[in-house]
Length: 337
Image 1 (cartoon, rainbow, N blue to C red):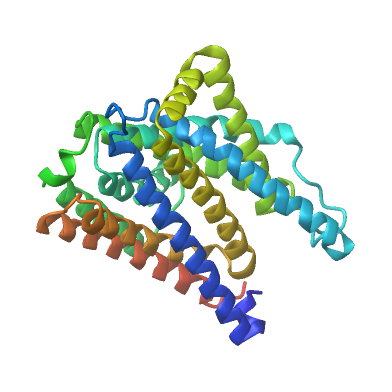
Image 2: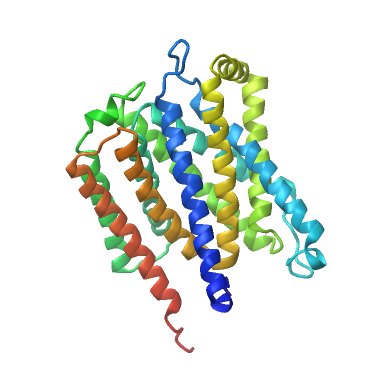
C-alpha cells in the first residue's frame, strides 16, 4: 500500500517532498551537466576531458550515500528492516553483469553531449519505451494494445519533428557537433540500459529480500570499480582528469555538485518507489525531463525553435498517454476464470 492510502495529509506531504527532491536534484544536475560539457574553464579556456568518466565519479558518491543510509537503517530499524522472513538477498556477484552495461551505457550518454545539445539527449533518452516494446514484440512474443502502438507512433513522430529542425543557438556551444554520432551514442546507451533494467528485474524477482537501496548501493559500487580500473589501471585517463580538476578549480565545484545531485536524486527515487510505487515515480521523472529541456532552453541559452517545441509536446503527450493506459489497466478489475 502506498503512503497516500493510509497517511492522508502526511502521505501528500511525503509525496510532494519526494517529487520536490527528485525535481531539485535532477534539474540542477542537468544544469550542471550541460555547463560541464559546454564550458571552457579558466585560466586557459580548456574543456573538461573524458566526459564519460563523470559517471564513474558519480557512482562512488552514490555508493557512499546508499551504503550510509543502508547502514543507518540496519542499525536503527526494528527487527532489522522490513525484509521478508526466509527471503534471500542477492549475492554480490549477481550485480556484476548489469554493472558492466551500467558502466558503459550512461558513460556513452554523457559523451554524446559533445555532439548533440542536452535537450536532444534528454528527448532521445525519454524514448526508452520504443525499444522496450519492439524487443518485447520480436523476442518476447508480447502483444500490445492498439493504443500502446499509437503511443509509440506519437513518440516517434515527436522525435522526428524535433530532429528535423536544428537550433543554431544550441549547436554553437558543442565541441564536436554531429547529430548522427550523438544520436547513435544515446541509442546504444538506451540499449544497454534496457539490459541493465531487465537484469535488475530478474534480481528482484529471484531474490525477494533485495531492496531498491541494496540495488543502488552495489550497482554503483561495481560501476565505479569498473570505471576506476579503466581510468587508473588500463589507461592514464584518470590521472589526466585529476590533473585537469586540480588545474581548473572552478570545474571541481561543478563536478562535485553533479555527483552529489545524482546521489540525492537516487535516494529520493528509492524513497518514492518504496512509498508510492513505480507508476508514481515514472510520472514524476517523465515530467521532470520536460522541465529539464525547458531550463536548458530558457536559462542555458540552448534556445529551441517552434518546430522543436512541437516535437517535444508530441513526444511527452505520447509518454503521458502511455502512463494513463498503464494506470487504467492496473485499476481495471480482473476477469474471473
